Image (cartoon, rainbow, N blue to C red; front, side, top):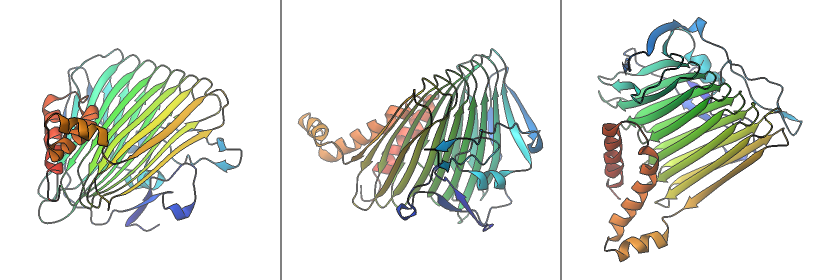
Length: 379
């Protein structure tokens, strides 16, 4: 393995190599010795502590699953990971910041973790969220800053979540990094019986953003809801790999992406709903809407359903194209000029996701960032 390059975001079941979507390569050379320490605020009752990586919990997905009885599905880490084994190995060792949500805890006040880059600092951070039985909590993880001191900066974050029986976690992930910053962001989740994981992501910053998400719905009636809004302009790159693994009976998953590509931006999305043996009565649905503002953008969407259980319902689809002309005409008929109408429709698409983030100031900042990006040179 090239020590300066990681193979990440590998499809659980590979397709034709000529399509160039089986995995991605990420350059990890030049990580600064200066590290950006996260700022953490939490409501009373939440326990925050350090944990040695050797004490990290193991939630290894059983390896006996197959696609059509032939090709083994990749499950090569001790905890679900979208970015995959090489990233997990690279992030191993050291300490983990552990956030424990006690049993029965309930609060509308979110745990807020901010990774703020300044003075040329990079970040390499491992986070673990232990959400105990019956707890109901909210988390916001926000990355901001970067591209200072005249050099590119990097942020590597590996987040792991364990949801015990009847636990609920509402998790918002926000990327407001500056240009010339590289982000590798991975989240793995294990859900017990009746657990519910809600995840929304606003991906706006960084010159290269690699996002991995893997959820193991291990318990009966486990529920997963994923929403992602992304805006990429100029020469930005976005590469995502989402993998929802249904093991528990009657588990439910929903994946929704709404994105906008402009300039010469490129995006690859791999979305896999994976029905394993025993997940009788489970339901998975995946949808992506991509708006292409310019001819030079590159979009690759790879929706996948893997199934080894008969009594399940799996659906996927993608809508890719320009701004709807009927919607544009409607706005113009109300006295809104074409440029303003385009901005209004694009912003509305993204804000339909970000408006659910439980922080009013952050929502305003995201809205302003979207407006500024859409009003940049050439827009």
